[in-house]
Length: 234
Image (cartoon, rainbow, N blue to C red; front, side, top):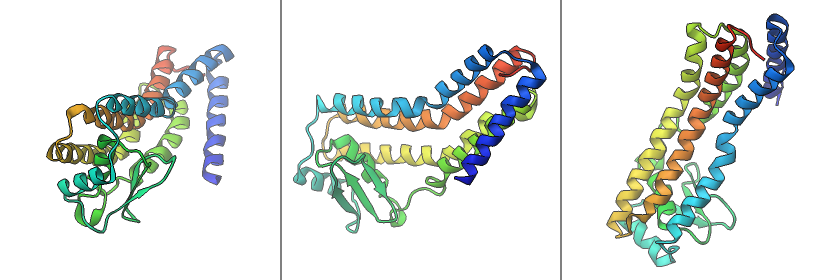
C-alpha cells in the first residue's frame, strides 16, 4: 500500500510539474491521460471476454472432459503422479506450483486443461525462472516509468527505452505460457483431440502478450504525444 501511495504521489507531482512547465490545457490533459489509461487497462477489460469467446468457440467442437477423459489426457501427457487435479467451482483454471496442483472448474475443455497440465511437465513441476516474479517486476517498473515519462525529454534515449524496460520482465512468463501451450497441444494430439482446442490455446497466450505490451504501449503513447507538442505533456 505504501508503494502504491508513493507512486500515486509522484504521478500527481509529475502532472503538476508538466502543466506548470508546458502550460498544457486541461482538455489536452484529459485526452492524454484518458488515452494512456485506455491502453493500460486494455488487458484487464479484454482478457475476460477473449477467454470466454475462445472457450465458447472450442465448446462448439469439443465436449467438456469426463473423469476418464481427464485421466486419459494426463497419461498421454505423462504428468507426474504427485500432481493433483482439483475441481473448484467458479475459479479460473490455473496451476499452483507451490502446491503442485492444477485447479480447474468442474466442466473443463480439453484445450484449457492441456495448457495447465503443460505447466507441470518440467523438473519438479516448477515454472521457468522468473515466470512468477516477472509480471510483478514489470508492474512495478511500469508504475515507476509513468511519472518518469512525464519528466524526461521525449526524444531522449531513456524515454525511448522505457517501453522496452517494462516489457522485458514479462519474457520469462511469455516463454512459460508458450511452452505450456506447446506441450498441451502435443498432449491433445496424443489423446486424439481435434485441432479445435487451438481455439483456446492461442487466444489464451494472446492475453498474456497483451498484458505484457500494454504498459509499453502506454509509455509510447505518452512519449509520442509529448514529442508532437515539442515536449509538452498533459
